[in-house]
Amino acid sequence: MTKIKKTNNKQFLSMLPVILSLAWPTVLEQVMQTAVQYIDTAMVGTLGKQATAAVGSTGTVSWLVGSTVSAIAVGFLAYISQAMGAGQNDNAKKASGQAVMAVIVVGLLFTALTTSLSGVIPVWMRVDANIREMASRYFLILYSPMLFRTASIIFGTVLRSVGDTKSPMIAGIFVNVINIVLNFFLIYPTREASLFGKNYIIYGAGWGIEGAAAASAVAYTVGGILITITLWRHKTISPKGQKLRPDPAILKPCLKVALPNMFQRFATSLGYVAFASMINSLGDTATAAHTIANTVESAFYIPGYGMQTAAATLSGNACGAKDKERLSALARVTIPLVVVLMILSGGLLFLFAPQLMSLFSKDSEVISLGTTVLRMVAVSEPFYGVPIVVEGIMQGAGKTITPFVFNVLGMWCVRIVGTFICTQMLSYGLVAAWGCMIGHNVLLFILFVIHYATGKWKPKYMRSADNGK
Image 1 (tube, rainbow, N blue to C red):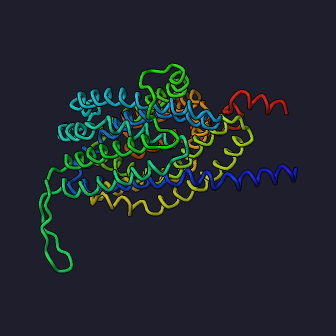
Image 2 (cartoon, one colour):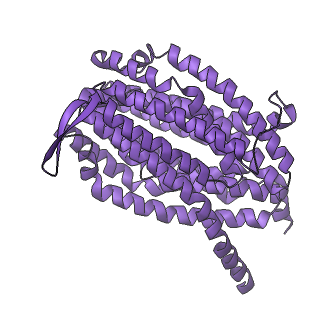
Image 3 (tube, rainbow, N blue to C red):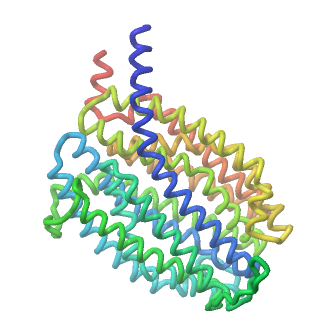
């Protein structure tokens, strides 16, 4: 028994630096992205409650599009990380070439879809008639460079699958800086500012929320170009010289992982759309409070997604190398670590919820309502972190069907049905809707923990080896 404990301690100590080295660039990248969301929301918030509602009203459609593209990227992550773990570098490079083809096809498809539907999406989302035109223009501008956004998502995931989390982070920093600077000049009109007793003229386009969308569009375009150049020059995973026609030997295993994940993200994102649509029907105050609270909360589950990236990459490597001890050790390290991190982030969110809401709105009703729902969700942050990491381990192992089932059950049977009953039938407000969202997170925690405990998340050959002992 003592020997086993010593071995486990050694595994923990040896894996912890590797996990953190993979996780921290992803965490920093997402912190930067969230900082831009904060700045965008704060800048747009100065234009009034309607502007904030218009920007946030189609946000869930953005999640739907982005998460569908991310699901395709997960297929490449599982394949490439396993190929690298097995020492099959040539197959990993072939998969990189197939990723280029996927970016072109998927990027152009979503560009056509999002731009052609920009006029009707606010109607589908039940956006208030007074702000539908504003929301439509914002969405059209924001999604015009969808090809470059697709490149950022898929190529960034390809780089992470070989352990390079720093390159996507650096590209993300450039994107965020460009976005902030352009926001400053495009959102507001020309104005006078005082600094150290001197007055200065600051020139501006005065485009309002269209300026915020244009700034993001330019930043996304630059980001897509940077990440493409980085991948092309990468020593390990460059697609240079690879054929860009479909290769069934590569695409079949990628799609086997990607399709269930895509259906999961599509179904859950549609749930987010339905959820937001019901909240939009509650009026401007609820929509603005929900939009800001969502933006605020997004910073506090970043540690979970940083750990998920590390877990997915290392899980794929362990499966490719058929190292069941390393795979088991990975779970034993990442799950307790993410619980601790999410307890800390949830505690901070609970304490500073009013101050954070005040950064984005001066409306007392919006601040009060947003503070209430943020403090509710802060308590559930640890429950949210564990499923994220377990799902990352399963993604690396190529197991995406079970997460699909769990997420669809949680979204549609708890969040959507519950929110519909509360808001549309019983006429409750935003607090009840967020209560249903928390119920969804708790259910996912229970389902993923039980599934992890059974060991069914491991590949078959590892489960049979365990049973043989």
